[in-house]
Length: 434
Image (cartoon, rainbow, N blue to C red; front, side, top):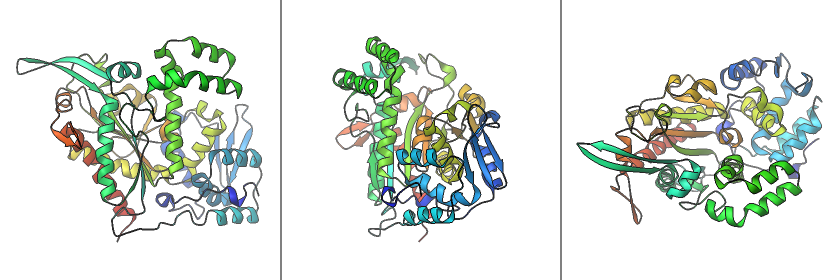
């Protein structure tokens, strides 16, 4: 046996249990692979499907890992419950070996409480854990410029010229606070990856992290050989903007994923606001407005060169997390369209929707291999509710006409939070009928 019982981390991902504890025909996983995971056929020679097994090949087109049909129930349960480091050890040891029935039974016994759910009271979301990630972090103009999430332009309405200033990290945090409070009222246990405005996932501002932690972190990564000497020297000497682009953006996103996965959520909600890509450089308003939701998938060949990415790929291939993510995302999109009156994005609305995404059969829901859609171990919705630079939305998002605790925020923010909230309530009502 490759993983000891005391290494198993028991969680309750009730949303992915259907189909996990019995072995589907391999063709079922091939269909999921073709539909959601294989971007432009780039994995055709990397992932092979046979009647009794699935093979992942390395860059030399040699078998690197084999998953046999009878192993899938145990391995899929592991992929939703085991820590990443332990999974890496497991798959490194397994490789092409066919696990025997004793080993498979031992794994299943270790995770046999994985689908349990203990309601604490009568509230509809009692016992449900929901992680909310307010996208980005800036709440001031200087940080927003570094993060490249600042909209600042002149806008003319009724012969009056207004200056529009929008900071996405501020909007997402306000939305997350409203959503969190509404979900708590329904009994849910909530995690926010950012606890305060202008704070990163490390609990402090980017500026404070840059001044106090940058050198310590870089020195540590050099010592553990996670950074080459060449990159270390470049990061030590580059500008603050370059440092953010080359290092901090991804480093901070990994921290968000780590926080979320430690919480073992039944659902994760990632909140963003979009811009019209074709309105670049966003110094004026646009008449385009659309919404979209991202889920995991759309892997490219280079994505499977690391053991970590292979593990996340296998989780999306062998569990039902993609289908459950698609369900919550579809409900969210329906609310974006019906409640916010924002239409679903079409593939020709943005170049990235054509180049790095796979459209699902649900309007506005796209598979995209973003860091968070890949690393988060739960069903998720990654929402982009509207274009901030739309000529109507930029005005609505600039109004402080809704009271949020001790401050005034745009009522439009409340409407966005309500769209997520209603989708979440419907999602869990479907999964947890009375």
